[in-house]
Length: 90
Length: 314
Image (cartoon, rainbow over all chains, first blue to last red; front, side):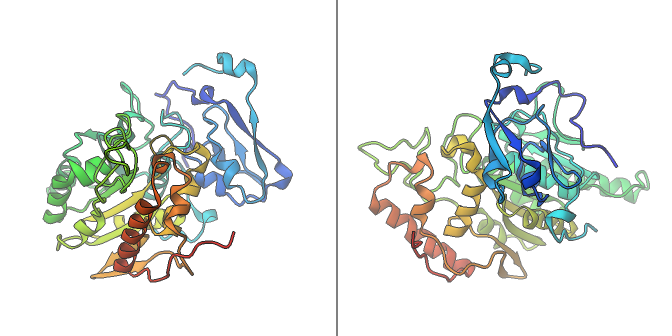
């Protein structure tokens, strides 16, 4: 099986675009995988018991939090260091 | 043969359209691409006519696909795909290629499928090439800054159809119904369906059905565009679902001359509930909304959606 990694040719980390980030409350997640399938980036990973989020590429659109039926995901303000270009530049 | 996906849990984990692309946050077409690539699997060749999904996905030497991809001009996605499919057939016949023939998929926008790319699409279907032609419909020319396209709904603001004192409704024309254009004029067509990113498992199964068909297939996917339609990026899926629930977009398969509806509905929501969430319709007056509702009612009746539009109690 091929791992779900970004192609090595892409040097972008689109996560630096983000102004808000999704925060997962793992105990509320029942692994229904709606956020996984609805993420346009493919930033959400399937896991044991609950999903995980790849913040390197998440653009902070908020679809995952909006669609989560159990409100396990909330959008939170991004840290100022991130907004100043703390993450790898795009 | 690609198997039917019974549920979200059984959807393949592998991605062939991977992170790093520079589409806008909350991009509907990007999600359509991801789901299509997921459903089609590794033995696939994508043809990408010019459009958002070419411009925003590629920069020099880079692209987010893990399968072969080729750029075509906006006019000729169907022709490039025809050539690729025909070449594989010839190579296989001459025993110069022994592998499994790859899936050939054109991923065109509404410009590359419904407007300037229509003749290449029609030619490909007419000649009967074994290609799946997908139109991701964001109802405008979005990568050049939201100009009107033939699928832009009546009454929508675009930079080419601004609302003002002379033309209060913005766009005056009613949209072209491409699935219908395709369905009724191409005897070689083996499968046709419409899909929505609001129903992702249904979308992936339609991609697989189109690929399994021995001959040309056409899939029209509605993919909301937060920038062009002017709604917050977290509401992309909500907008896709509302489009279907109001009847603005109808989900069906068309096989053997019959429409088969994909979603069961008890009733439809009035189009006003869909329009009020998008700023591109903010200028519409009640008489315009009435006109659009009448158009939607008629279109729904044609494909067999007989339930009436009923305002919710809230």
